Amino acid sequence: MKPLSLVLLALLFVGCGGSQAVQKSVFELEPTDRPVYERLISQADSAVRYFTTFDLTRIAYRVVLPSDGETKTVVAFIHGTAAQSKLYLPLADSLRERGIGTALIDLRGHGLSGGTRGDSPTADALVRDVKLFLDTLRREFPNAKIVLGGHSLGAGLCLKFVDYFAEKKKLYRPPDGLLLMAGGFLPSDTCSAVEVQERRKRLSGRAFARIDGATFAAVLPASIFNLRPQPIEILLPNDSLAQVAARNGLLTVRYSMQFLLAAFPADIAQVYQKLKCPTLLIVGRQDELARTCDAEYAFKRLSVEPRELFIVSDANHINVIWKSAGAIADWLKETVK
Figure 1 (tube, rainbow, N blue to C red):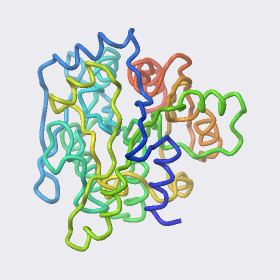
Figure 2 (figure 1 turned 135 degrees about the horizontal axis):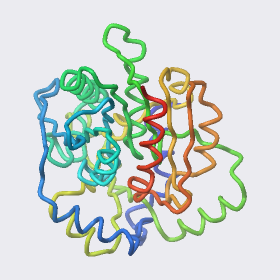
Figure 3 (figure 1 turned 180 degrees about the vertical axis):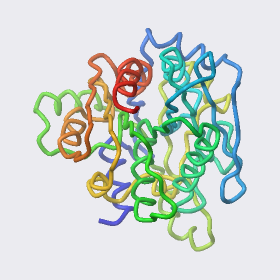
């Protein structure tokens, strides 16, 4: 199956409406999570570093270290769609309290990084950025284990990175561990009827994104002139905090097809065969997009050891970021040594 077809299937799988459909976002901000979002929106940018990637684009990343500045492990973490590194500071803060360092990247076109918003100039730009990110961290922390992790789209990009570089022996150094959070799973055709029904109810009248039909139709003709329209619009919750975050540039809501092609591997099952490092899968049982049954199926298909699946019973697609931090820290300390 062609990569473009895979991306379209992925969009349909998570719920993507047409431009004429009146739909709400699949996400809602939980009342208990509002203080977290409020703090992140008001928090000043700090501990931001930059590296220059292969096409001279400046890429931002935040480094959060234990108070003594010493760490045996650094988690290089990639954010999900629409987000940026700032959303993952609660995870980084929790890991810091447990003696683990974190480096949170802003993908090109997101957050404080350069590049066209919501776009990738080439199909391999993102994985090349990730490689230079890891190379930068290995220079900064030569004695630390470097673990690669990602949330949602970021998990897909972790797998695409492995897929792209695993055969390039002279260029590839595997990460010392892999974290796939709320994404990067294998689709299962044996989900329980209960989970399927709950998901159907959750998605009723709601969608993750909307595709503008006219703009989508222009994608191929525009590519002749090296133009990349952005037909995909991420639907934000109808909430004042989400609107403030979007106005302040904290969120990216429009995407080109090429960005998605650059973020996901063509064959996830094939990539699983290339994994050579300890791997942890994380998913929230209340996740609006990722299915628990897919995570369970992916776990069974993993051939690496050690491997573990952690299901957070009360977590959704977003708050799993901070609700899983304790389990991630325990796993890292036990597994990545």
